Length: 447
Image 1 (tube, rainbow, N blue to C red):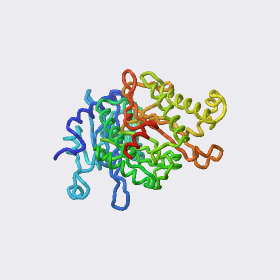
Image 2 (tube, rainbow, N blue to C red):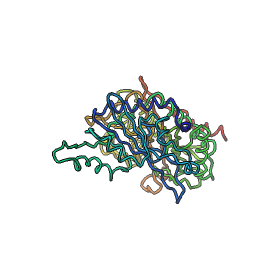
Image 3 (cartoon, helix red, strand yellow):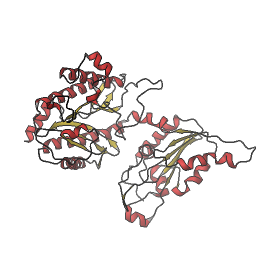
Image 4 (cartoon, rainbow, N blue to C red):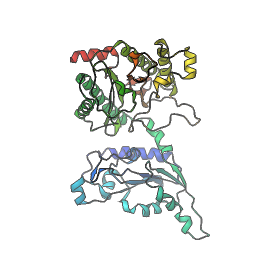
């Protein structure tokens, strides 16, 4: 049997190294348990396209539904047991090839592999002598069975036998910090996703015009990233014309685009399970109105001020605070909030229009895992190999009658994907037109 097309033979070593990193951080008498995701039903016998739990995929590379895994160290050797669906020729004709236990060993580097029905029995065997159990189970699939299995030894052994009291801990506490610093291999995948996304945003700048529907642009983005070998998006496309942009996670994408309004596009491709996340805001007719340009320039100014700070050693929260101070100063200057800058920052009165935080880790999850604070509760400082978004925004809903009419119905967010380097930073998404001048010039060339 040939290995699945999504898994290269060289990847065995990469996943083994990741498991080694994890097990290096666990006590010697530990067992890590991971539960993969099930296949979800869309309607009756029609299923959603399967997407594996990212922790499970990160450590095993195994991308099939209803899989589980055990990992531990024994005699200085790392062990992996995979549980998966058995081979089934009839099912595979209808729904695609399965690796089966034999494929899990041959192609994914498992030391042992079993049908998923054997999980309880084998887990009981592997629990022997383990004092620390680390569980990765985002959906709680093992909640009902794990505690009874952990307690079975002390409930069923003779009264004078030594009792086992395993300590159960979320695996995420140890695993997720490892995922924050990206390897060169991971950075290559992220770069590809970002490059495809930049092409997608450029394609929308070429296509947009009054009278189109948001859905047409959402579909055009999908087609463009597919032309760049990306089979899916990292999250549902947000294509929000006019006042729709004031809904942060607008996904309806069903309205007609109107002349004189702005269009906010928050869309990112996914490439081999790694994400991009880019937002641009531009005029539907190709020209910013004066009030629109004021807001757009202010948001971009705050973004660039924060990006300029990015280098190893900077506290994470300094980026948010920088964005907020620049936005607050601009809002005061425009007369949209009142008070001195110190008063405004103290009261946080800018938050009415800024609404959200200004960034997050980026990787296998679009809001990638990993702590933003250190072990003492202080904001984490930036390190080379971190990738994150910066995405300040300003939002003025159409029903905000206490602000000038020229600003109502305007939502502007600009988001870039930033890599921390050894001596500073790299803006991975710089290729998508950002400034009002760049956007208008780009759209004029198309026209």
